[in-house]
Length: 550
Image (cartoon, rainbow, N blue to C red; front, side, top):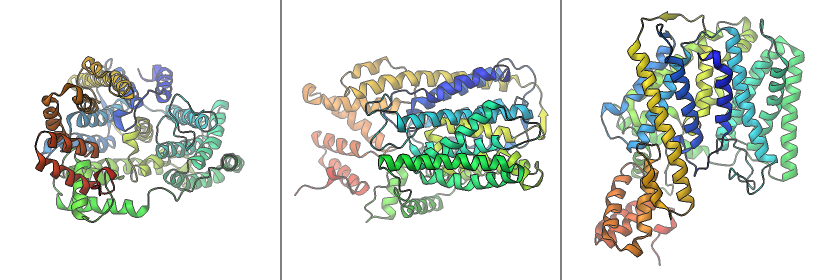
């Protein structure tokens, strides 16, 4: 079913990946484009299983990935505190869709031609984002529809975060060089050669314009290996590739000199701060190694623990993620979380080792093995959290993993598992409805927020559940406070007090601390008001609104 309509799937994915929806930033399903891509995955899963009457297929290597993913999904059932319901639900939906997507791809036989087609489709995905990034840098005006900052002028494509764009461009560069390499039985058609050539110019151009350390590091790790392999196989193509890459770098340098905005890749957050964060995470894992600090509880537990460990620090340590995937799951899930991630990593390593053995000499192994294409995104997950910020990164990574899991791996025909098949279809349909409802809710909430919460009554039209429930509740209670001066209804204050105390248990927010302190004082709870203010000063030492006057 998938490959009979593969061009339809590709066209819809290309459109979904560049379609901009108004939003207020964030990550996960707070970015509407991620919900659109989640809808695309849901539809593909439904289409893959609904007409399948034969047994379901799996590979021995994929079991590592599937078992690890299932373990991550059941972590909330192992006990301990869990975070806010809508946030947890969104994470479970995202993880479940990723597993279902990979399992759906396993139902199709990837021939050599089909693997090449998938890789070339991934190249096209990267090229489209490169085109959007180039338009942002060279063509966008100050008042543009995406709200792109033309003064800072660091292209981010559809991702709204330039480091995420950079790792995608590094992946695109690796894809272009992979397609550029000669392979027996594979013809380099004109359009593929043109797409690869364009990417060989655009990727280094954007990597230099963005100035992201992780993007440049990934390119510096992968590109020399690919160029060396290409030199062994076809020196003429290697010289052409080097010339195209050099042209992109030269164009970026000329553009920066002309605009006077050359990037210093050493600027930004310091390595010492990141190392300090990682040390705190290791201490948290050591203190609660068995089941961690609770699913969805990283943000609130980390900021409190960091300030208990470093009481005199001037840093706030307010972050949703430690910028390392292993530490994140280690803190939230303890040893079970680390074991689950270890299973996934082991499965990936086994796939890569198997593909390395398929080549002839090192040049052949590098040219034929698509595992190098996964390095930029995999590397990025260890210094930031791109899979939460970009569903497109997740789709790209899963497609490349499936390309590695090829026909020489043993596929075992199983008995007809109708319950599993229809369970996957039903779950995908529920995710489809959840994300479609969330997409509508996101546009309503974004519009109301941009209007200053004046038309808060529109929230009554929204149907629960949806991924933006926490944000909706935040806006409703804040709007009640803003109108309290006119309504003078004490129930509004009591509602905010009850909601705020619950909110701070799983989501630290300096604004809620300040508002809740004021509300408690208005209700006559001066002691609690001062406790909240003191706690906020401790957690946010540089917040000027909390510094005592005089």
